Image 1 (cartoon, rainbow, N blue to C red):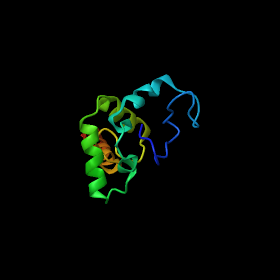
Image 2 (tube, rainbow, N blue to C red):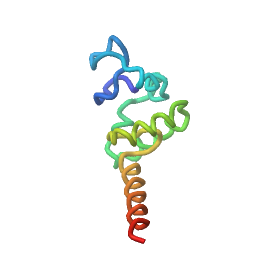
Image 3 (cartoon, rainbow, N blue to C red):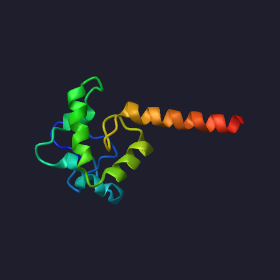
Image 4 (cartoon, one colour):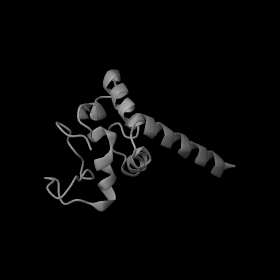
Length: 109
């Protein structure tokens, strides 16, 4: 998980000393994310999607991340705002919308 000015959602529980609550083993992968490394600006991951420079920086960090798959699964499960696993909220939403449309078309046949 990013540090600094990052404002975690309830799912971002980082450890026993976290002010957000006790550690949750199902979220331990977050501590291994490339976004937690020194020098990574946490604001890149929660920037407005019109901030193309911040979004590009966040996606570059995600491309080098060892927990990208788990992060992507979590992002789709929780529908959190921000860049997760190299996808913005809008990109994830668009993919889900396309899948729902495909399903509706299949059911209509």
